[in-house]
Image (cartoon, rainbow, N blue to C red; front, side):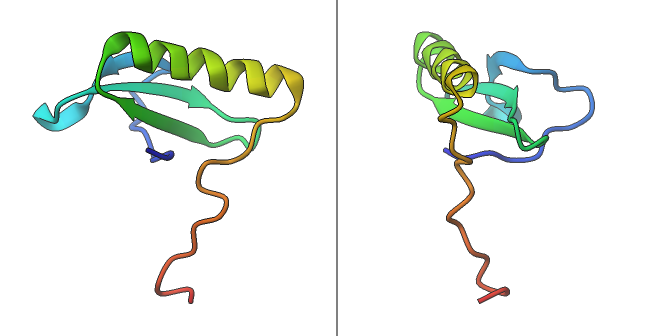
Length: 75
């Protein structure tokens, strides 16, 4: 799942999905200056997704997961 806004008290890393939803969320700051989240069913998958995002940022090949989305109201 793509990036959503995080509350001020949510720092980058891996934690349980909020609101009692199943799964784990990897949270990180992208090179675009925005905070992004990736939701996965297990802690290990969320941690791997976070590391993958970090590697892509270091290599300069990171792509905004929400970059291709267009709001219906904007359309």
